[in-house]
Length: 67
Image (cartoon, rainbow, N blue to C red; front, side, top):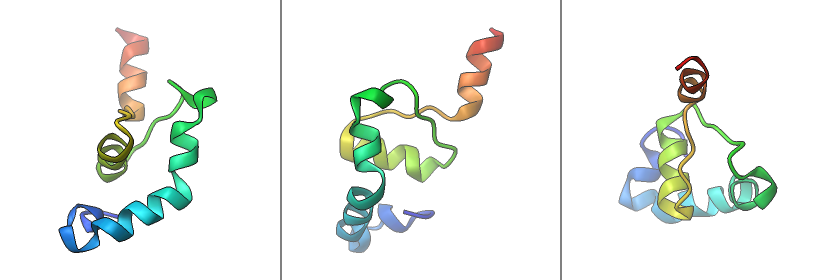
C-alpha cells in the first residue's frame, strides 16, 4: 500500500486485496503476536485499520529498551 495509495477511497478495495495476499496471514498468526514492527506509516495504519493490530515502529521498540 505504498504511500497514500491505500488511504484513497478509489483504491481501498485493491489495497485490502493486496494486504490479504501479503500481510494478513503474518499479522494474524498468533506466533507473531508482539513480534512484528513496521517502519512505514501506511503499513502501520493498514494493519490497524484492517485487522485492528497496532504495529510499533522499530524505533519505539529501541526506545523501550533504553528507558
